[in-house]
Image (cartoon, rainbow, N blue to C red; front, side):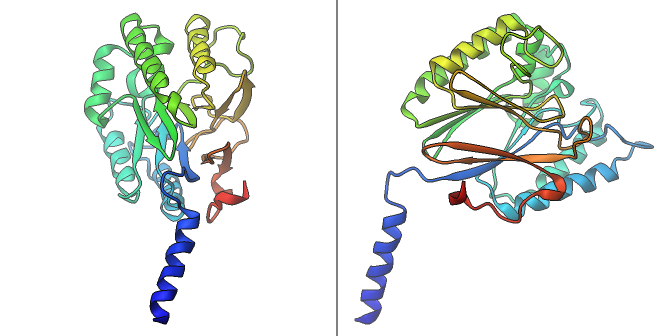
Length: 280
């Protein structure tokens, strides 16, 4: 009898913290610009692989809901050794943790031709994605085609994104992830290598405002920046491979609560041993 009473108490206690239909907090990891092979010597990149393994160890320890690597996966997409090395490293991540890959300029070229994009899709499965996690809609974009201004691909992806955001209106939170940032310091800044051209930039920023996107994540700069525009927060992660300036390689941990989103960048020697969801 005592065992039955104890069991019912445990069931009631568990129900009070995970009621059916209630969205729960979770976190995920963003890595950007590992660019494996950039500093290779004599065709090898052992030092870079050892550094990346530190991120893998941290991911396997933290056990995030998923991992996004937002572009520039390898330095030379035509180098078979770099591609094989990257695949080998990804296989070291716990198979229970989903990995989502997005293209950067190094992965499809500055022109992001249809052939290069199809090659990326053939190698990694997709160049964009959308899924729901605990009441949050997470969308990954192929920003190189936007940066390059390839009209057909741009139009197709823009229409796809608008459709996904329209459907995401029923979710509590919306996160958009890509390689290139739409802007670095301000939405009306001049066109540059670091941002999306102003004409396309404005179209996407309008979508973010219209469909209440909470957070936009990017990379490409190899340094950290953060800004806000309208009600959207824009966060650019530093490089997981070769950061600019005095920054060290790092990763970004994004904690998603039903009521807010909290993104923090950690340099490689400061990654926490665990993530406590309810302290943020």
